[in-house]
Image (tube, rainbow, N blue to C red):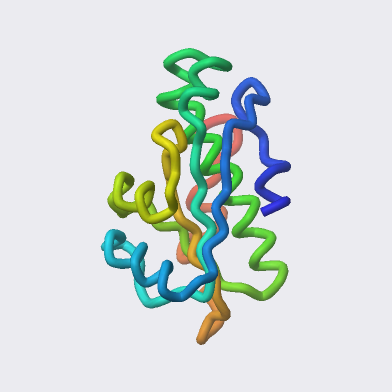
Length: 141
């Protein structure tokens, strides 16, 4: 999670909240409201945003747009660090937010944006399908 804390955030607002879940029963309950979660991960990091604080620091754009981008950037940092530790990770966005809020006893202002599933992969990930030259251009397309 420390890698996530070092992520950039809009206006350096740092309005994120991280909930680490390792209890298998709680993970199972979260999975029940998360159709995008495949399998049962060893652990979850639920990346949330304090929407009131995001509004205080950045107005509507801070609450509605920047906070979501900030959660994504923090999540990528966490997932890259997990890869360094030979852990597999998968970001899940298809879950019932109110359900996860209830299961984690989150106050109304703390909204889950995504969950990072963590565990040891059964197999090594495949390299990216598209070549660098197919997706990156200099100066013009």
